Image (cartoon, rainbow, N blue to C red):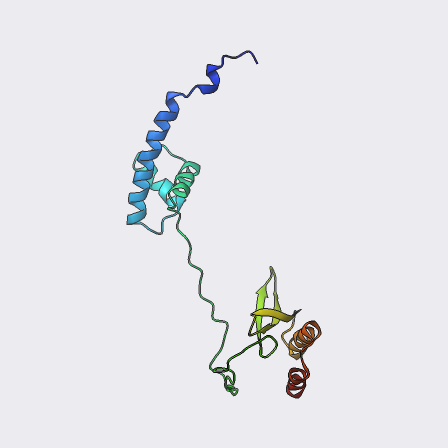
Length: 172
């Protein structure tokens, strides 16, 4: 290439000066983060500029990432279950039961999955012994057809013994 070999190993004094300046900025960022724990990189950049440091937001963001100083936003708690309803609450009859094998007790749940514009609902049936999904169904509507489809998928997948199957037939 026509350049001396020493060019590859050359380290300029600017790099050393920049490292020292980065260390000073990191120290100041840590002090500011203790005083203002909710400050993000934009506010930190503005504060450093007010204090006379020559920085831009990209450098402050990089230094805050390296020092793990970026504030993590807390997500707002959304209550999705209404436990204060007039409907009967059924007791847990398997609370003290000892499960010795698969396909003795199945448990079910319904949840929602948020998409960009709306929701879809997921009904899942789990085997209580192995904690594995034995059946599931997905729908845009939360209705009896969703849960029945999950139950039918579980029966088709596991083909449980007659005692379990007849118990399921009695409840549906």
